[in-house]
Image 1 (tube, one colour):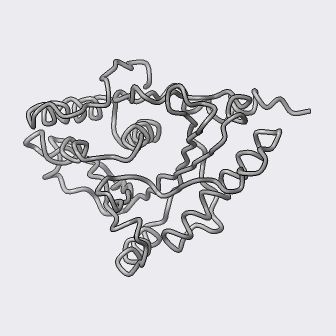
Image 2: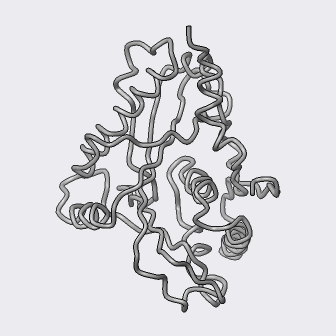
Image 3: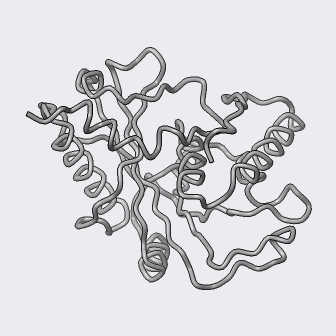
Length: 250
């Protein structure tokens, strides 16, 4: 019989060390499959990204040049917040499998179904599992699962154009995440991080940026620090995150 705990540890070992320096205080990571199975509701979302052969303009960087441009796609939701494609996993409503591999398979099916419903894409994709978490104190109520999937540049363009003619009333548009900080030290990623994000989407975004090495920890740290300063200057809005030191991630 397969050890589910061991399987889950293997699945999450590549991500467990990549903690986000902008860590939501209201969400708790979960690597315990037995705990996952007790949740009444499961939701899964996916980050779509691609690499483009077109170099990033040096104007966007302070003496930093990248050989390829990374593009991350986020949705603009009906309420004006940013988030990722996905939703509730209907496949797990009736019964949760006893093995983690089967559980993961159903999560992937749920993500692919949501992708197809929201974007007309993803029915036959196999997104990579990143991690799971739950709202603090609600591990028996809801469990959130996150995935990543790399698109080809042509797929990214097709999805972007498709969003223009979409009839969805939940998603009003798509946006690329600016994975750079401009020379003024404010525009680019720092400014983007001051937007409103659905649930723990900003933590999911930054964790994946670090996991894949899209940006260095130093770049992410600087961007988040500037974002905090901007938010505080606006009047000390509800900062739902605490800045933590995670120098061990690289």
